[in-house]
Image (cartoon, rainbow, N blue to C red; front, side, top):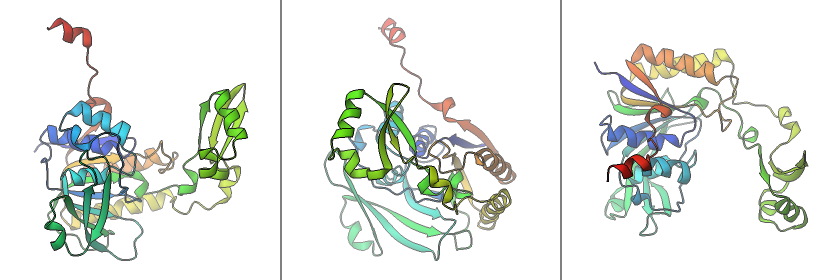
Length: 310
């Protein structure tokens, strides 16, 4: 039996590149796949692009560049639905009062396919009459809810499903700027970053260098990090997921796993623990081969070698 590829990525928008790479290698079909998205977050943000989604047109180098320059960690599923890579999306949530299901409809507002709208509808009939909409059935559920048995899915897992930092903890950081930019920020009361972010952003000087500092509040440690779980609870949540996959007889064509460590959603001190234990348990269900993005990323064009062939 052929090994199932398990792609390990750092941040979740890289899944878009992985899915297209998998299509190019005939790991999954070009369309009508089922996505089982296991995540603390929906990642259903509607994107706004500077270049046409249609322009990538199956070119792996283009798709790779598009992923890193046009997508963010919450906007990678909607364009894949628009491309018809997925016609069903299941979001397995750790915290959900009751399951829900609707049809997600994605529409490009412009001929260039850079501006999109999304909406969920219960009655798909009227939407199907309008070819401009691309649709997928979208279901939210937990491990305790019903799931159709014997489905073959693209298993998409974010480690923050098992333990997560509160959103308030994440968007910290600093960007070095010029002295002129620093002076403008300090004296302009209507500078767009100042009026947009208020106390969440400030400018400072350190060792003769100038920085914009985001959300660096010393008192964040006083806020309870309610989404971060103990190691025992993490293992329990992994066990529950494995039991779900077993009970529903879930078949997988491929698995992609996102660490979410750089963005800070998965606690840095727990990331490796979660990854190791998740892979160990998945290995009890599926025969797989781990693949890193470094192994599959497009190689830069050797211009000299290319010219020598002319």
